[in-house]
View 1 (cartoon, protein in one colour):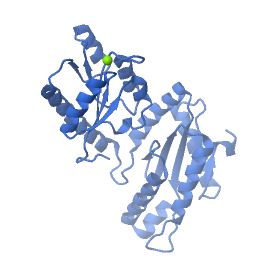
View 2 (spheres, protein in one colour; view 1 turned 180 degrees about the vertical axis):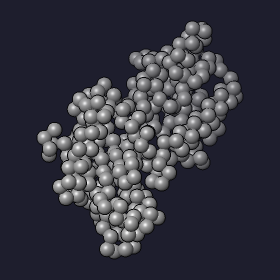
View 3 (cartoon, protein in one colour; view 1 turned 90 degrees about the vertical axis):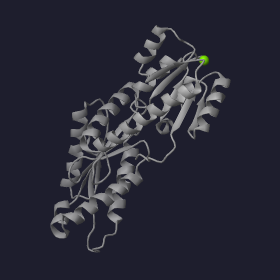
View 4 (cartoon, helix red, strand yellow; view 1 turned 90 degrees about the horizontal axis):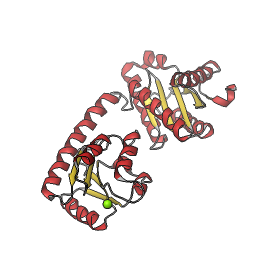
Length: 300
Ligand SMILES: [Mg+2]
C-alpha cells in the first residue's frame, strides 16, 4: 500500500566512493532516505529493492556496467517500475540514447549541477508516486484490498516466465470458501462482505512478503508462491485453512471453512496451471469440503 507521507528512498549506485558520498549528502539534506551500492552485483543481491523509489546509476563500473544493470532491472517484475536516472561521465549522444533505450527515465552527465539534479529527481519521484497510485487503484479489489482477477492473471503469467527462465519452483493455491451462499442468505450480504474482508486479512497475514494473494472471483482466492515447492505451499494452504476455521464471529454458531487446491508448476501453460489447481480445489469440494488437496494426492 502506498504511504503518501513516507520518505522516498533513493539508491545511489556508483563505484566512485566520493561521488556516492557527495550524493549521500545532497540527498539526505533534502530528507530523502539514501542507500548506497558500489556495484551492479550488489544491487542484484539487494533484498530491499522493492522499497526503492528511484535509482541513480553510474555506467562505468567494474563487473556489470550500468547499461547491463538497467536492462536486468527492467526485465524483472519487481523492479521494472523503479525510475532509473543515469549519472555518468559518458556524454556522447549515442551513449545517452543507449541509456534511454535501456529504459532509463533520465540521463545526467558529470560534472552535474546539484540543484538541477534535485529538480529532476523531484519530478520523477512525483510521476512515480502518481503512477503507483493509479496502478494500485486499477489492480486492487475494492472490498478485500487484495489484488483483483486481472492483475493476478497478468502476474501469474510473469511468474511462470520467471520460474521457467530461472528454473525456480512456482506453486499456486486456489481457495474457495465453503457454503458462502448460505452465509449470505442467512446473515445478509453485508455480513458476507465482512467475512470476505476478514478472511482476506488472514490470508495476507499468513503469506510471505514475496507471495501474491488475490480475490479471483466472488468467494474464490488465489495465491501465487514464487520459489516454493509443493510441500511448502501445502503447509501455507493448511495454515490458512486452520486459521480461517478458528475465526470467531458475532454469531457463535457460524464456522467458516474453506476448500483449497495446491499445485506446483511442471511445464504447464498458464491456463493448464490454473485448470489443474482448480481441479484439485473441486476435488476438495467434492470430497467433503474443509480440506486442501494437493497435486501429489491426485497423481498429477
Ligand atoms: Mg564509475
